[in-house]
Amino acid sequence: MRGPKRSGVAGVTAMVAACALALAGCGGGSSSAAGATADDPVELTMWAWQANLQAALDIWNEENPGIQVTLETLPADLTTAYQKIFAGVKSGTAADILPVEYMALPNYLAEDALADLGDLAADQESAYSSAAWNQVLVDGSPYALPGDIGPIGMYYNATALEEYGYQAPATWEEFEQIGLDINAKTDGQVYIGAMTTNPNNFVGLSWQAGAHWWTRDGDAWRVNIDDAATQQVAQTWQRMVDEGIVWVWDNETVGQQMVADGQILTVLNPSWWAPNLINMDVPDGTFGVTTLPQWDGSALASANSGGSAWGVTASSSHPQEAVEFLTWFTQSPEAYSAVNDETSFSYPASLAQVEVAKQKATPFVTPDGSGDVFAQFAASAEQVPADWQWSPTTIATLTSVQDELGRLAPGSDLPGSVTSLQSTAVEQLTDQGFTVTP
Image (tube, rainbow, N blue to C red):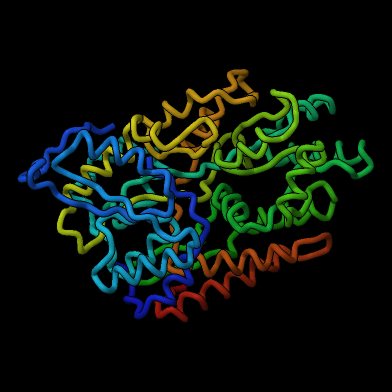
């Protein structure tokens, strides 16, 4: 099921040193673990790369004297953090509770790092969005409880689009046509959008289009990056770059300034990107949020970018108590509020916590006039195709995607890059000892 076990820590950490977006997010507050009492409590340790979780743990520990959780903060550098995690797994000194990026879950499983939570948490499925729950399943069994996710939406300059006579584009065909018209009206000075060299957006757009880059087949893997869906995305965005209607976003500072100045009219990103717009010196209501433009208006689809879950170490002596805590931690509105202030726009995986997030006041507009930003991301989350899978070499492949996107320019060959990525991804799996089937 898990493929060959990797030897050593360095190879694993090199593959999973990705940018974490983890934010754990309705369970009751009372402890029910057998034998756990205030005089003889179960002691759990929790490793996390965020230091702001202590407020939630303080609430839990006060209300649950029989199960006490101690937070230990991992290094902020993700490469170093993963080295600590997998060294701890190998030596048997890892914490009871570990952060698990969705895309890194296969790496944890290859190291037999996580407990199968099927007997303890399978009944929790309805508490989370399907976009999150499906990413913690292996052969139908959960190996972690979801914390946050990153459903992708479209931020748009509502004021500028209205001045040009348009609303937010609902399809990619409209996106391109509006871009051509505005670009012509502005002598090429205004772009409908941008393709970032960060690989997550290209992966997300391919996911939305129906791609399945990796599929586990028993103990083997299938790689299908060079498929029709990904080629459709590559051909469309290469064409729009050639037409001069989208900007190649390779510098965050420059890109954000162009958005503030009205030169880039849309940005494709999850909810966590919202503070960048809020901090811009523009009037409230300048920017709006909606779901992604669609390839087929009759079949709504979106994609996820980033996010993490929380797993229980396979060597933990107290998996039941760990799951009891994590159920509260990832579902309780109280826990969410304790670690999220008005500046936080992380999107929780828990449906109960989403309802708390929706109460946040924002300066954005939405197509339905409600201004409910999180409702837009909730709609996006509901549209994420559930059958996407990550591979044990995902991070290595994403690095290769980033390298190819770094070459994106007028006259480049993004579709050809996709074809090259197919063979690269196959080699990355076979080099790590995995079997790849045609």
